[in-house]
Image 1 (spheres, one colour):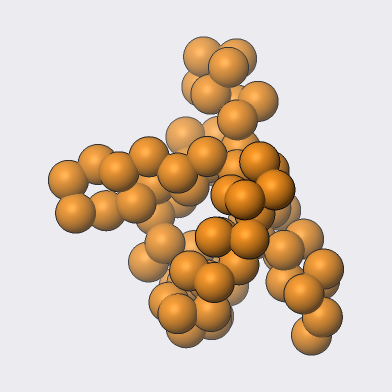
Image 2: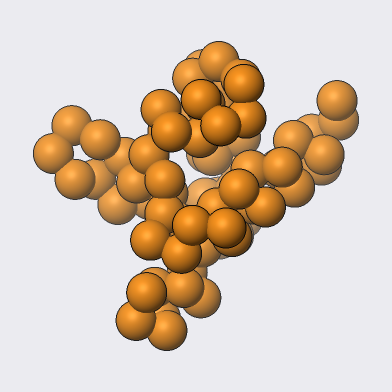
Length: 71
């Protein structure tokens, strides 16, 4: 699977959950290792496609437009 396809899968998953998903939740839903999810989350964050918010020990990833709309 190409990098673009992987990023698209992650964005589609995040778009379904407007309050975001933790990296573990993304990993479970996409049937990918946490390391793979972390790698592509970092790329998407660098591209400003997603936002990461740390809540306790978890990192919550979400698409900024959902956050701006008030969830």
